Amino acid sequence: MKSETLRLLGTTLDETTATNVARVLNHVKGVSKVAIATASGSVNIDFDEDVTSTQELRTTLQQEGFSVKEPVHGEDGICCGSCGS
Image (cartoon, rainbow, N blue to C red; front, side, top):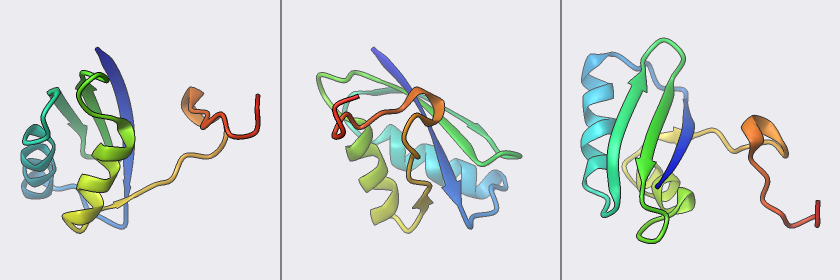
């Protein structure tokens, strides 16, 4: 099980939007929990990394019209690994 936090951009996370984000993510196979912090625009997702991936979760949100902040190297412990570090 893996936990990932994504940040949404340009979206006011009111209760309706948060419900829509949770609905979209809960339909992704492998997602077990979605917790949304409306004030910060953060979406914490628990998922089975053998079934889905962070990239698939990002893509799913983007396909539904949500803008997801791209991680900066080292931000929140995220590293794509492409530079070899």
